[in-house]
Length: 282
Ligand code: AMP
Image 1 (cartoon, rainbow, N blue to C red):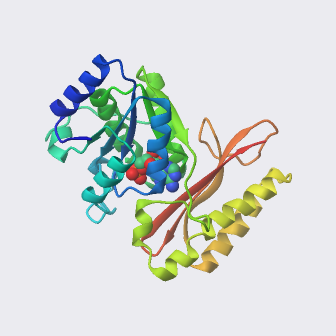
Image 2 (image 1 turned 30 degrees about the vertical axis):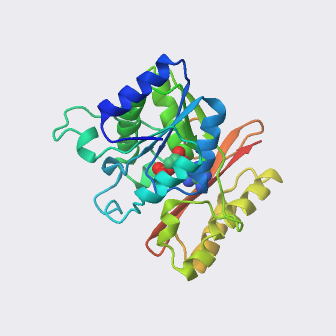
């Protein structure tokens, strides 16, 4: 497995692979790899000949009061996991390798970031698009795999691929969960033992709401309010909980037969922010 730090290095490695006629699958990550990331790598392997994984904690997608400094960094373990999964190349740049000191050009997102994580994390998706756009240009993959866990990210990156004419197939991998339903996340490491016990409450609330919707509750606002109170009583602080149109990502107060929706929530448990979602097709 090649481990590249600089853009020149990764470009050379990818170039040789392409000359050999290999299809490149790409999995961008911020490291602290868990089973969820590994399922993405496995999907990329199925779709392409060689897999490139990037590991980069992207400062541009953290707000000033967020956890950039404390975000888990486990490079040695991550490289071992990538090697065990048969990854061909890891791209692990330093901040200065990918970002110039001065920036004059920015990407802006309209509408698609109004709700969900975009609503509570200003600049988050602009930061993601900036790094994903750079990584796509550096790695030039044929296929890129992202997780449903960050479904708003997937939808916004898809839109960028469309509007910026990247010639890349995007694949969405399902959410990898612990046995009790908690969506795996690098941030779960922040949870205390007690919080970890409570954490699957978000999954359970979403599962309950999903069932009610599938049973015919098509104006779910009361149901949502009730579940929010239940979560608060358990010790969660609600960031958002709602049903959103799968494509426009706008809040859907009334659900229609034949519609595609994202039932999504973000909650705080102590200093840990948890997100989860279900895709619902009526
Ligand atoms: P991150 O390292 O958190 O930026 O995540 C890198 C990629 O892994 C993103 O496409 C995430 O959506 C995906 N991912 C993270 N956790 C999970 C999970 N539990 N199941 C599936 N994909 C995930």
